[in-house]
Every structure is written in C-alpha cells, then in structure tokens.
Length: 308
Ligand code: CP
Image (cartoon, rainbow, N blue to C red; front, top):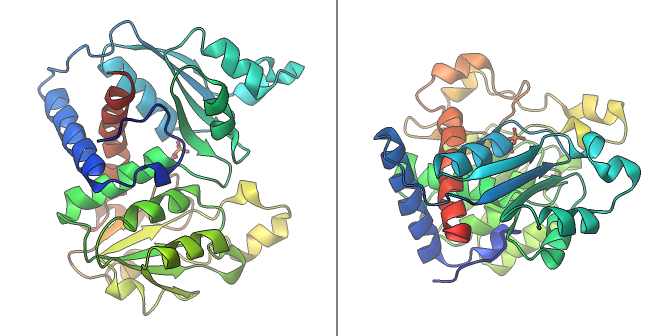
C-alpha cells in the first residue's frame, strides 16, 4: 500500500485498499477516543495550520486530531491579514520558514494550485485543506467514509450532487473517489451557470462512470441513495447579482427530504446557508453533522498515515 508524503488531490487515492485501511483506522480512532484511550502517537510533533480562507470544521478538526494524538499545533486562522503575507511575503518563503518550525503543514488558500506549489517546496508533508475552487481531498475522504458507515457500501449507489458544482471543491475531490467503486451512478444537478467543469465530466467519462446532468432536483433526488447538497459559494462570484440569481436554486425542506427513499442519506460538507432548512436536521436521513464529526477521525487517520 502506497504511503503519501503530501495530500494534495483526491486523485492520489486510486487504491481502494488504502481507502479501506483509512476507514478502519478512522473507526479505531473513534473507538479509542470514546474509551479515552488514544495513544500519544504524535507526541513531540507539530502541525501548522495556515488558513488564508475562513474555516470552522477543517481547521478545528485538524487541530483536535493532532492534539488528541499527543501532538501540538501552530495555528493561523487568518493568514491573509495577520501573517507577513500582508508585507508581501510569498507562499514559497512562508512554506520554507514554517517547515522549519513544524512537522506538517495543512494549508487552505483562495487560489487553486497553492497547496501543490507548497508541496513542491516543503520538506515536510503538506495537506491541501482547500485550494480555491480546486480540491478539498480530506473532506472527500471524510465523505466516502461517511457513506460507507451510514449505508454499509459504496458499490452500486446512486449519488445526487446538488448545487454549486462549478465552485464546489468538495465535489471536485469526491468524484474521483466515487470512480473507484463499482456501478456508481452520479446525478449532477445544478443551475447551468454552475455546471460541473468539463475536466471533471471528462474524468468521469474516462473512468466509465454513468452520470446524468440536469437543473431540476425533482426526478433525480427520489432515486438517490445519497443526496449530497452543496452551498452556492457567494465568495466565488464576480457580481452580486449573479449570485442572487442562483443562490436559492435548491432548498431541501422537510417536504423535499421526505421524497427521498427511506434509507437514503442527506449529506453536506457545511457550512450551509439556505439550502438545507433546519427542520431537516431531525429527519433520520440527515447525515451532515455525523459527517462533520467523522472528519475528526478521518483526519486523525491521515495524520497517523503521514507522521505516525
Ligand atoms: N467542510 C469544510 O471545509 O468546512 P469549513 O470551511 O468550515 O472548514
């Protein structure tokens, strides 16, 4: 089984055996955490979390994961405004410096490709914690782990991806992982302005994955085993009126949620705005808060993989 130095793209994870291993490791982390019996695997090691874009789940779960395994963190939740980036320091120089202080770096940046650039320079592992509209591989690993836990399989599932498929980096990372499983069918549901980029559709075609595209939720969501809802990403729009035109394209309320199959799950990487009404939280199909918690255990498994 391949061990990675860096985690930059979900496309690195092309071995289902590695995913199974990470799922088992994440399960074990959850079990040990519940028993308050976690090992100090990463004692004396430091993770730097360099976030140039806002985050709640990714930064805190990485930091909690590191600390629960006995390690420490150097953290900056607003590198864009509070680091020497404001004085003109380049990413390359920042990585050269921070890699002298930390054993691994988790970086979130507003420009696609920045994590890959950091990995080319860094002597310590770099983790892509989201790069613009590029990828968010640790979220996607959390997502497939959640599907496996909730539904007991990924093979043969029908997955509806709903919302901003143009800018949704979680979707760009989830799709390559779904291609590893047999007979998965994908429904891509978005306003046409927010259609999945061609390169990702071509990837699905290259991998022989059956997919359908449309702009209507009705007719697709009722067939789904997994309804994965995404936020329309206001911060990626050049003009406010373009965002206003599509921001509430799809709203999952209690009535819509009840059109899903009884066993289906509703996922969302969060944060949500209006696309899932709070009344859905008590629906048995709602899996998004469990998904966020699973991110902690998957990131513990990943830190063990990189540093353990
Ligand atoms: N899912 C996710 O990436 O959430 P944050 O932006 O809060 O980290």
